[in-house]
Amino acid sequence: MKKIFLILTLFFNAFALQLDEISSTMQKNIDASLKLLQDSKEDKKQAANGIFKLFDSI
Image 1 (cartoon, helix red, strand yellow):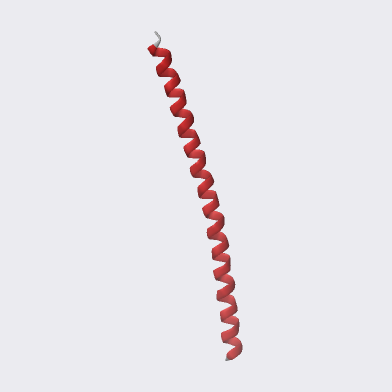
Image 2: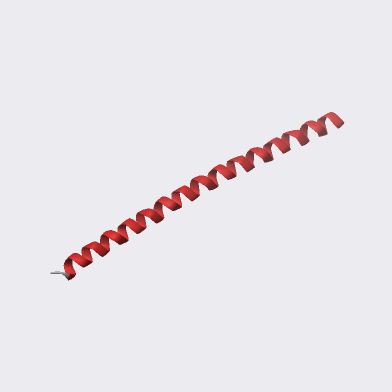
């Protein structure tokens, strides 16, 4: 009975560590995606400002 309990405990610990690693990897990917979106937003804002300045000078 102790062996079964030990095996189950080891299995659940390994599973929990794997979930932590997956969570960490997903968080890094989400952060990178959000940074790309923010950079894209800034680029669009700069392009829009350039267009407005162009039309203001006309």
